[in-house]
Image (cartoon, helix red, strand yellow):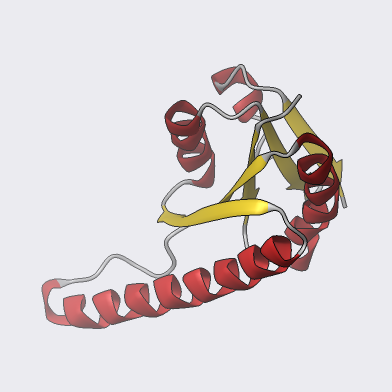
Length: 134
């Protein structure tokens, strides 16, 4: 039923709770899982004299996010779940909406933190969304 599942994660243990459900669905349906690390940019905007510091900080954030994503991918791949992933920076809702347009998944699976941060997705995409509360 679900040939491609998009899974936005943010690096938190709460967000990882959706992975158990996605793993089961992916194995049952032989689905491809697209992991998306949608990360807001941290820090302040740089002035001209501290631009290099900002770039170094961004690089560190990106390296950490990619390493985290690789751990998740490896764990799923060991369970015979086909995965690929990407790290993107900016507004998480906008990133997810853009990824849905690019990937055309059959399902978006998200762990909700009890906040309404992903509520706007309901109005911006027509893809079914599985919210797992944690």
